[in-house]
Image (cartoon, rainbow, N blue to C red; front, side, top):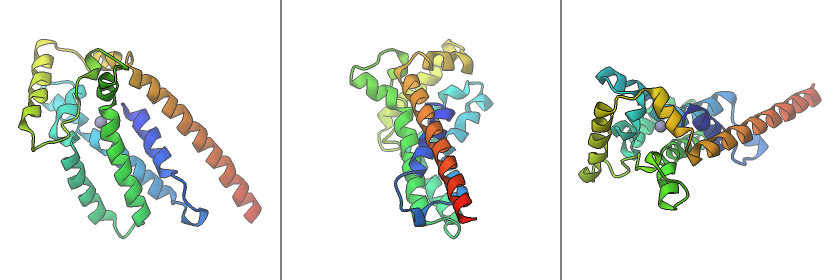
Length: 192
Ligand SMILES: [Zn+2]
């Protein structure tokens, strides 16, 4: 999944049913969306070594163990600022990121999609299963022999089933966002 889908998913996670009194502040919603996208900051690493950013799914920075480290740092930095609920939802948003990045692989296992996008993307067991590190070497080898751009990677992605799921997620999140805006505007009018 790419950034619009991760933003939409994290936003929907931030809207998990909670009582009105426990409603998150805008800064908390933004924090959850940031966490849901934080893994993708590594997109800028591969270009430093001459590879397209698209190879970043195979890096150790796109693994659960890195997520735990990142989450711990963010928790230490912001624990006084945000509620426990915010951190729980932020953790779910981070986990959803990796699941969605590997979702084409899952669709492939279920015979719901095929092609290059269904190859495993996330090294879930890193650093415990060194065998799976082969994926990173294979990916780097592939990009070395087939110099393709980020646009090529994107064009391959748009032909996958996950892209359709991403579009639907973005539409649903936009509708929820608009509905919340209308409800909030009505509440603040009533309170005046
Ligand atoms: Zn990602």
